[in-house]
Image (cartoon, rainbow over all chains, first blue to last red):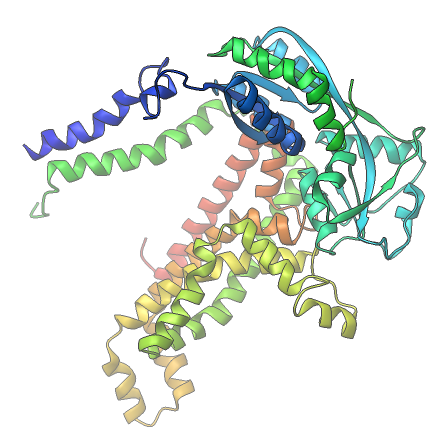
Length: 257
Length: 262
């Protein structure tokens, strides 16, 4: 008898999530007429501030409830390849979107929806007087960069090469947020991050990098092939590309398209 | 033959538990690009990370032994509120998300930290982004495992041995070294193993406090994380398997030497 009860306990939860097409209505109680349409967005971590605002607008206007997974683009792509359920993919560079297309994950054509540039993040008030990339090679300065294998780090290397500057970083962070937090905590004197990071952080100052040394990152967005709600996914993407969506992105430090 | 039989239900549950460990391990072994293993082993990047991992984790274990055994002794000799307070403090790093632990270490020992600022001004000392920081981060997260295990050993110790030693005129220091520590050998060993294993796998506190730089602070878990993010799972699996094999080899070797019997 006890054995049978144990078996039941073990099997019931498996059954509950066994059906692949189970809608959230099966678990949520507040389902009925006028229920919000759910959409799941896998977005590059740097997009969190503007996308959270976009989701709020979309909830008000179209009754669409957005669930986000914010991670490094590489992590998101790996999760999607392993079958993570999502409707929209927003990538921080073209390479990963191309890879997603190659893996047969994308429906339709991805669209560029924003650009981002690099900036030098320094402590508030810029106490070390850093005004250009060449200042980063100064002795005694603690400089932190993103690892060259992640997009932000790759772009930083390109910018430093264009400026013909050699720096000796104290750390190569696996995420651009690591660079930002170390400057914000005062443990690093400077780091190279995206303009949008400086805007969203609010705890560091940004020193602009001139255009001839700077790198422009493209952000792409697309509906996923196995989207459970392709219409809502398209609604989300259309709003991101609309004038209102673009305005939100610009406020967050991105450049529109 | 007279060994007690395990009830069937418990056997089934134990099997489920084992499967939870076994299947992911099997996944690693099956998906491992065995052809790349040889090349990865001799790659300078691998040996750099592996050496650093071993050095840092062993130093962290040594530091944990030096501070952790006395801490366990103090814990076992206190009672009531003091004990509960000390215990909560000691186990805090076990429940704290390691990344938060790393940020906390920055706030204490960083250039702007509570203690770090004074150290920086007085001696020009900067701990973050150094190998010392990686060792500190590992000690922070791993030492509780040693303290808890040794404290358990101390509590189950028969106090009569220490009392007899004292009655025979042993000083408290002598009793500790010649009676308590030898009696605690199994607890100290298993505590040190747990501590070392935890230090070896440490990621979050290290990345937050020590950053990531090859040869300085990039231990194997950091290298694995980067490989996973960039070159895909293959590189990460190879590195993880190497770490796994090395640590099992060291454990088996040490165990026989320390405890005599396998």
